[in-house]
Image: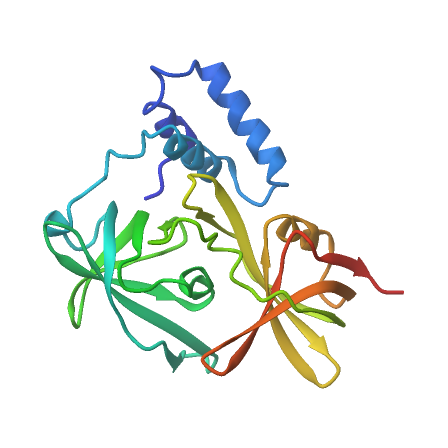
Amino acid sequence: MQKTKTQLYELVKDLKTIDEFEHDVCKKTEEFGGLFDEDIVALLLVDKLGRNNQSLTNIADVKADLECTVVGTISMLYPEKTFKRKNGSAGKVANFDLRDDSGICRLVVWNDDIEQVKQLKQGTKVKIINGYTKQGFSGLEIHLGRWGLLEIEPKDETKNPICTVSESSDRITGVLLKKEPTRAFFRDNGEFGFVTTITIQDGMQEKKLTLWGQSVKEIQQFKINDMVDITGVNSKQVNGKTEIHVNDNSIIKLCG
């Protein structure tokens, strides 16, 4: 279970008074525009203070049916797979082997969370915060669930994980069909950012756009079925497919 704000304060009570902690949580919640509740904001603050290590676990010591935090290096990447859910909708899953000095396990990432791990490669160091574990077909698995956070520390630290898109710009205008839940992620400099995915009906096509940073907050003011105009869109080719990204340099407006 995800810890509550009150439980999380116990981890930093020697660093901050309760009033200081409450003030920081309130301030950050407002900065995030209400995208996260106070419990997950408190988790982000506690982790930034270096006190989210109570569950830091060696991979060899990880057991099934637990929540834990592990640090390891990607040693193997497996092809992304698609599947059909019971309700008939499509889903996708990506698998990685995660290794530390004590052992190896499988890291499993589902659906829209896969956008966060597209830049992973062999040798990339990652930290899974509050992942949940289970016994899978290939052995022990760590999953990035609703309360899990992913910190990526690229092997080449000069690269920003959210700045891998091309420099070409474009424009998309269409009907906002869907907004996915917002996710938090950690950059290699210790700061955390936000990412979400939206679906736009652009003419006869449905296009998925990945939003980063400030654009995640801006899209919250728009409602489903609004006609939106997005300029400064960036595209890149990955395995023959076009990915569309919206960042802080993009402009999102309501049409009409």
